[in-house]
Image 1 (cartoon, one colour):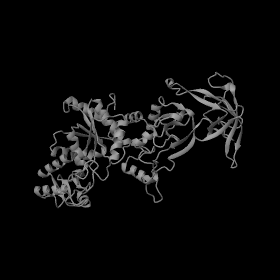
Image 2 (cartoon, one colour):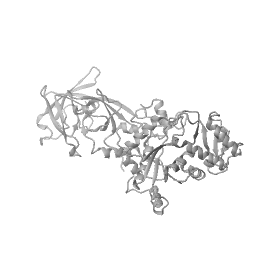
Image 3 (cartoon, rainbow, N blue to C red):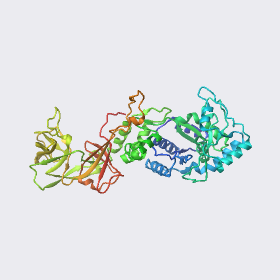
Image 4 (cartoon, rainbow, N blue to C red):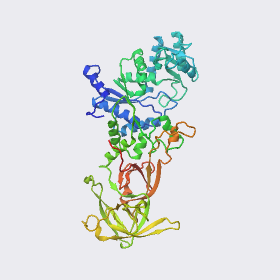
Length: 552
């Protein structure tokens, strides 16, 4: 966030501070380490850290690691990296598992107060007993166990005397409540599984709805900001804080989650894409994960600007993915050096240029940012141009190369196509052209005009490179399949989301580093892939194309 923007959460904080209800602002970003963060999490990160910064407050990074079956230290490390990369530093680093003993003691307190009981019903039976939105639930036959029996059973659960699913600890609230979340929710379940942080010390684990408010209260969180789907759980959040007799009373506030077109925001679905081989890992540049966006070449500045523009409200409408691309272009246009790359090469021989001669031409690194200076590019008798920049039989208003036509080579000379050579299959494999030495760029040539300018790379010094062009991974159209049912998200995976091309770049690109970003003339913004680029193979990911029809 920034100090000039306002939203309903910030207004609440201002009111709390001015009234004396709160002396400071403490927020937290509390991911579960069961997957990689995505663009939706970026909004929560930027909101929590940004709001705390606005009031000189604090933000904790806390891992809600209450489910050892799904969590892993790999995800913990990736989340830390993502938060730092987005530009934020946490004030405290915590794990829910740090508080397991405290949570256990608070659960014992609830039992002693007659507000929790050990239940032997299975998960399916608990669901059946819970009722529906229109029908009240019914009480478990184990609901009225004595406090002494519940204390004994809960201690034996902790000691590991029961198997997975045999017993749970439930809150005793109201089985007829119109809010289903208050119909005796489960507080603890048995899970004989090794935990990434606590090892085998525990075999019972708190449920998120019980653990989260206790964690917030222990850490002194003042405003517990979460997405709108937790709104119905706020009464339970407040019940846990109150009945567990927590000294600090955090306030839960909900906001509309960020949804983006052509994007899956479910960690479960993203995991499926990874495990079933639809993508090359969590950091595949087509993925909406922060690590995937970083690898593709998105910048933290662009993501922060995008999130600020989407605003903060209770609504959760989908934002056009092109809006994010717009902010990437805006961020890179003054930062990224210009260069030339040929993605689909077609060889050109300039027949009247001296054999064996190479001259070095001057080119601006970024015309929109003169401070980025100049570079030298070689020019000789043999160059590569794009296959798409030549047509044997062009339509009207085609101003690039065709037999007898003349174009300008960017930063160089006019060339004229004299003939073309085909292989045995009729494919055009080479052009023969002539050049006019009087037309050199920068010499003030004012003679005849040409309508087309094309880019190129000198052939003998060119650096081979692989180019990866991306389209949306998920198609948004909700078409029906052959059975007349809506397509599953896997059926909406775009089979054309990746195109791999092999071409050439200017020789000054030989020393690029992973994550270096460039604007390739006419093709868009590209990033040096940090995973697959080697000393012998340059790989460029297209971040975004140059232009879009999107308007803010």
